[in-house]
Image (cartoon, rainbow, N blue to C red; front, side):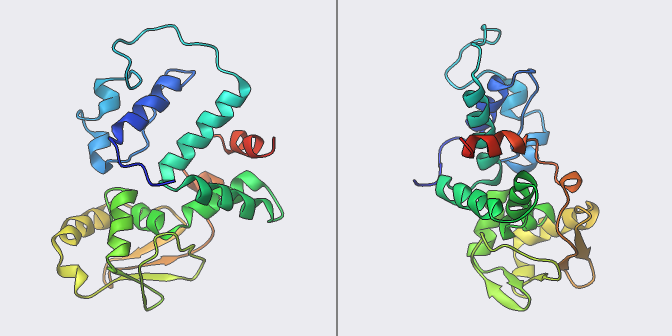
Length: 218
């Protein structure tokens, strides 16, 4: 299955329209635009193809709830269906809470770490920066966005890459915004360190991971 390349705002609108509580669900697929008035969810809370709001929602089954939660989480992190399932199977082999381990694996993806450090405006931009070899992990150039980082790993920006226009803006944001507590940003060296595995409280992904565990446990 290839990566989705259509209008990403449709994905947020779909999740918002499927919400039982009517809350606005944003997957932050367009970076800071999602925080502005230009956000499609703010302007149009209807599902793609639905012309008007307020239509009676059909009762969703338990399987439907599990499926929607799975789709929401997969789109949030921007991974393929097969990748997503493989991460779950890997998490299921680890002793402890499968849902929490699953979330930790996705959070520890290199592209997500770069996004959490505010070095990219979105996860898709972070993936592009990695594939263009702008980063070094523990001193080695990396170009694979799906690398799973571990505590003690050090991420740096290439010396030549620091002069690129995209980093001039992103570094200003990184210096002004604090990353999650499991990550540490060093302004002087333009580098970051993974301090620990992220706890569930440190992961702000708006999903119920237990529903996804139930989906794959059928």
